[in-house]
Structure formats: C-alpha cells, structure tokens
Length: 168
Image (cartoon, rainbow, N blue to C red; front, top):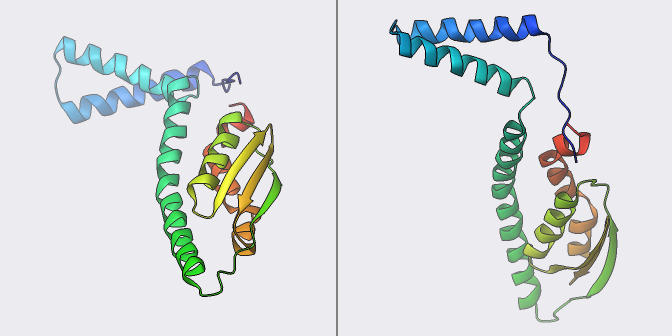
C-alpha cells in the first residue's frame, strides 16, 4: 500500500526546523562551526521525519504499537491456558470442538495474518485457514468461541495497523 504524505507549508517547515535548531543551540551551548552545522542538519531531518514524509516513522509507529500489543497477547495466552487447564482437568471433560468461520474487517494482509497467529497462539484455538478476510478457526468449547468472535483481538490489531489501513 502506498504511503501518502500530508501537505505541509514550507514556511511552517522552516519555522519548525529553526525552532529545533535554537533549542539545539540552547541545550548544547556550543558555537563551534561543526556543532552548529550538525545541529542545523539534524533539525531539518527531525522536522522532515515528523512531517509524515518518512516511511521510517510509519514503520517505527507500527513496531512500537506491536511491542505494546505483546504484553496484552501474553496476558490472553496465560488467561486461556488457565481456562484450558481447568477444562481438561474437569472430570467430565466438557469439550465441544467446533470449526467456526470468522469474517474480519481488517484490510491489511499482515494484520489478518497477525490475527490468525494470535488466535493460534491462544491455547484451545487454532486458525486452520485464512482466505483473504475469512478465517476458519478450530475451538474446543463455546467460551473459546466467544473469545474469538467478540473481536477483542481484532480490535487490538486494528489499532496497530491503523496508519496502513488509512493509507497514511
């Protein structure tokens, strides 16, 4: 998906870069020519990167959101593990395995793959097939079906990929 740059006026761009340069000079309190030159270059680079023209910034945001997602996923894995342990240790073994079809609203292929992998990592569920925006998921009981169909995982993943889905 191609990224689009947001329009920014040249005047605003230069003023922002100069403000950063002044901040650089105030913090460094060095007036050597090489130091001032580096400060000027870095001020323009930072301004350009924050103007939305850099793919690196978008990738960094994506990676940062993904890293924030991991503790939540780990929590869901532990929660599901405890539930599955209780289910398996129950004397009656009340499992009801089913294959369900889940339609996702995620528009980014990597987001759909992450959804499938997150479901598979959660004990008691397994993504058997992904076909565009349709996942076939194997679950062991109705509670685990609810965990998949309540779209909580999909919502978290949608927040990770929101820039890419908007085409920014």
